[in-house]
Image 1 (cartoon, helix red, strand yellow):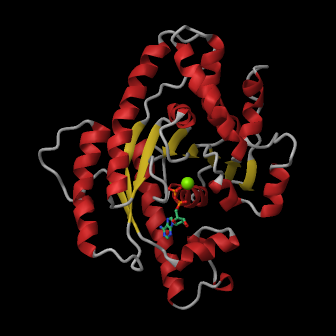
Image 2 (cartoon, rainbow, N blue to C red; image 1 turned 45 degrees about the horizontal axis):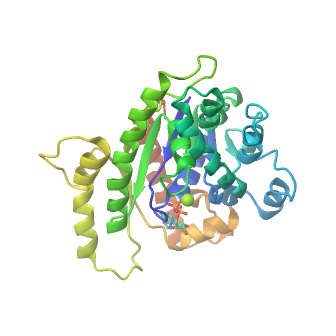
Image 3 (cartoon, protein in one colour; image 1 turned 90 degrees about the horizontal axis):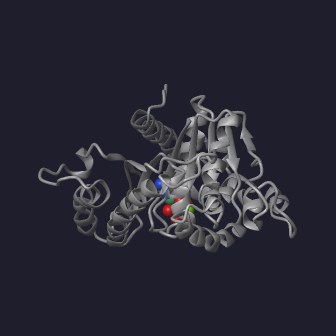
Length: 327
Ligand SMILES: Nc1ncnc2c1ncn2[C@@H]1O[C@H](COP(=O)(O)OP(=O)(O)O)[C@@H](O)[C@H]1O
Ligand SMILES: [Mg+2]
């Protein structure tokens, strides 16, 4: 089973939409896929489930069927995570449902990190709760777990990223995304180094994530034609992406730089699907499964087909890079 997080500490770059669409695409290719919503904003969960189901998942009392419900025993200090509920979307697609309450875990995780240095077993148990949560996908038969996380470098994300073998980096061609990469690259590197030190102090009876967080590549969200910025501005930021990715994220030399279009680390130049995205969200389907009854008529029909091809290519690229058979 492969675990891949989609991460950028900048919001609005399409992380959640990517996890949603890729989950459906992997499942459509017969790969048993688990989408894990570890963003306390729970946008991914709201994309998959209708409001009636969300209300059932998030009653005023306990939330046993969400990720927050699963980590409750850790929150209370009364034991290990509970067996997480997998919300079945289709036979091949499951969801670990998110929860706004998850933000309450932030302080506990912040507190656990330094205590791991003292070989504190409960601190290690807390730090690796998401690892066991995600690894429970193995019992469900998942071949791949796609993890959606929020846009920050906080303790929840550190712990969620440590639980991910691989990281895909969605970004937009703008100053904010480049700044985001410059922040997250060195931070990931620090976390890797510190985690490797902590592993030497970890208790043998708790399974530990390796904390590799291997960068798979980046995905550029292209601008909307409705956006008012001139094309030159995009080119300027676009041209900088291969350098910043190598320099900040990979720590690689940057002598000869390809264009984004030629960059082997660029997994996709993702189109802006404009009104099709809103249409898809309305009927809770990925864009590439929209039908004429959903409103995808006229020129939209071709766009829906192209969208399937785009995501299929992206899923194939990711599969090849992480070592999953995709056909
Ligand atoms: N390829 C796309 N085409 C059109 N709209 C998109 C696309 N990707 C994302 N969006 C829209 O952009 C907004 C931000 O996307 P989202 O996936 O929530 O980003 P993030 O998770 O990085 O904050 C949402 O309104 C979403 O519907
Ligand atoms: Mg999001």
